[in-house]
Amino acid sequence: MNAVTEHQFRSKSSAAKTRETATFWLFRAATYLVLLCGAAVFATIIFKGAGTVLQATPPFVKTSFLTEAPETLHVFEFQGQKREMGDKEFRAFKAANPAAASIRAESYVYSAGGIFPAIVGTVLLVVGSMTIALFLGICAAIYLQEYARDGRFIRFVRLAILNLAGVPSIVFGLFGYGLFVIGFKLFGIQFFGWHVSLLAGWFTLAFMVLPVIITASEESLKAVPKGFREGSLALGATQWQTIRKNVLPYALPGILTSSILGIARVAGETAPIMFTAAYVVRDKLPWEIERLSDFFFQGVMALPYHIYVVSSKIPQNEYTERVQYGTAFVFLVIVAIIAAASIILRNRLRKRYQW
View 1 (cartoon, rainbow, N blue to C red):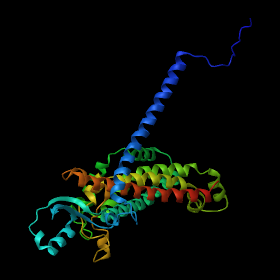
View 2 (view 1 turned 90 degrees about the horizontal axis):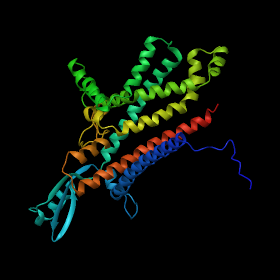
View 3 (view 1 turned 180 degrees about the vertical axis):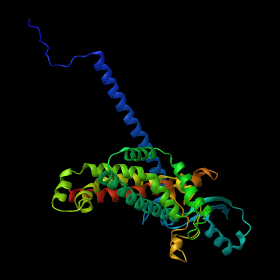
View 4 (view 1 turned 90 degrees about the vertical axis):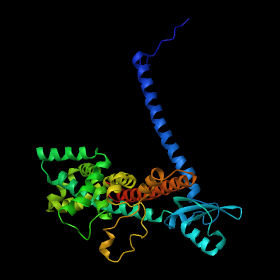
């Protein structure tokens, strides 16, 4: 009877191997749990929000929810039928039906109409703040990586940037409120009546996302091979020409990756704009102004702040719930569209400047 010889390289079971396997499955289960929770949140928003935004008949989208301003919802019974009308429609109905002049209706604030002003305000805040953040962040990254000499001061600056990345958004909101809303008034700098405004929100959100932009941009610049710089300088180009022509184009895909992360954070923040830029309700749209300068010095509605108000500042009921989930659904779609545009631009640049 021949004994089966065990292969010498075959893995043997041991206590260490058992602990390693258990740790692996623990981490794997934790990862799946996080993904499952995230999927459950998104599925709930999509399932409940789609009923507010979409409809079964053409054009398959409730255009009134996307094109009108928020209104008070009036719920009442008339001639044995329960009716729901927005504020404007309800007043017109009472004027056309004298019998309904003395009717009693239950009113629910912000539960009728739509969210068009909030959509416009959110897009303006994201585009304006990301433009400022990308300009300042790329300039700072170029200086730190290409011009600055490594020393105590530069190391301190980099450490400060990393620390700023962990500062809560409410602190940035108070900073923006103190500087852009109150501070300039104390020093007598009004700037066309500077107060809660788009410009204050832009700079506050830009400063909040700057650490992410600077860090990612600097790493992208660092990833470009030194040979690109040395070859350009050897041919007689200046340092700025080298950066502009031979370094920055190849770093742009990585920089745009950081902008995608910045968009997600900027679009979803409530605390900074609560102090600097957001109004609960604003009748006029941003372009309905008398002077061009008024565009920058006016407050706007925003989707995150609108969700916050509808979810926590008014009595909760079935009518406010559908507005909450509908607004959250539209908000996710807008963020996804902006992020997708950044991803497409990044991929095109990556194909163009492959090295």
